[in-house]
Image (cartoon, rainbow, N blue to C red; front, top):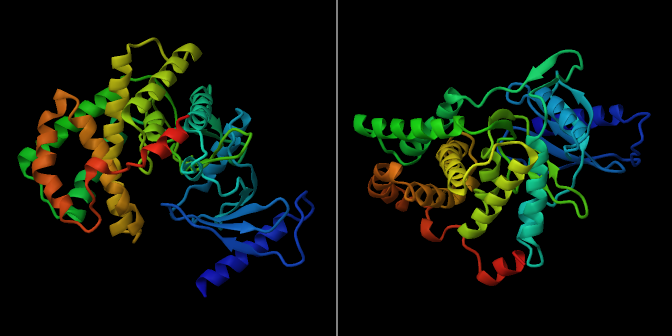
Length: 370
């Protein structure tokens, strides 16, 4: 009954908002529920012409004002964020442009897809995002200003803490010793330092194949950007190329990453750096992100009942160990993870061999990379 009342209220509000506007409605307007994401927002497709998305974003959990402010600013910079048609911040209602259902992840899984072309589009859009000239933008009320928060050391540490607060004790039942806490603290400090020494730019914070909408003949639609910050230049790049839901061959990832580094230098986003220096930034930023994600996926399951994210943990473990084992600075962490943590993972129902996590048939990859 609560869901039915919510939908009725959202539908009535949506119809009211479109009165006198260019969207047409059938005699019997309705809302079609859509699959949600990792947050608390609920999405419905309104059968208007063209269709729109009606969104319920509970005010106690979601910051719709920031979403609207960033959406409008990004559109002003030529980035394909959805147009916000109407908003009611008190009730948590939004009516936004419908980009359709074809996620980049869906398109990339098609045999006739072209990964090089799609990732070129995604990186071009990312460059445009990072070139946004200011970090203080008009707020949703059109009168005040909104400043992006800094991705500072405390925020980076808070995120990585999810690894030892949720993944280790809550999901695996592992208690850290004092020495192990010191080991993790040393890893965290190194990753924070590497992140903060990078050029600081606009960061989407969740820029990957499930937050980009494929639209044939157009730049990708960009969604889920309300947590944007000012932070390291490689954060969104590693989110895109070492996607937690989709894996590409390491040499291909390196080629794409270095190509983006060249674009960033040419555009003036950063001073020239060596290839090894840029890949070190990229790798270490990815390690920070994947430690965080191990905690987030655990929390989504344990706190929010979203078990689907458990199947993605082995790929995140693979990324974590591949990077950590490539740098002598993380030798102790790698040994500890393999000896103490991996055996616990292997006992879990969700576990699959991390060494093959994310693998797809070679003929499928060859077709997409053509």
